[in-house]
Amino acid sequence: MKSELVEKINRLIWTNQISHYKFVIVHRGVSNDEKTIDGKNIKAFKNRFLILDDETMIPIHRIKKIIKI
Figure 1 (tube, rainbow, N blue to C red):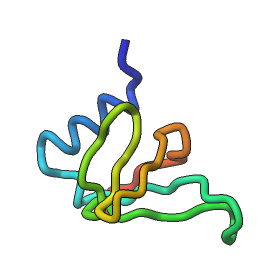
Figure 2 (cartoon, rainbow, N blue to C red; figure 1 turned 30 degrees about the vertical axis):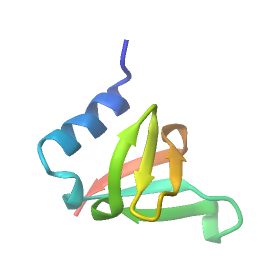
Figure 3 (cartoon, one colour; figure 1 turned 180 degrees about the vertical axis):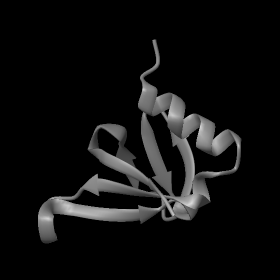
């Protein structure tokens, strides 16, 4: 069974809405251990990883919240 988070991310991609969101992720070593990623920098979602334009792979368990902008 797919998690709600997986379904939400897929829905955002399929409906071309991902660029209207920001993703707050756990990123150790920076202020508050958080980093914000603009949805327009996400090029794919595969095997429970967000894949960014620069090929960075972020596992979805690091997503803390998704914010509509």
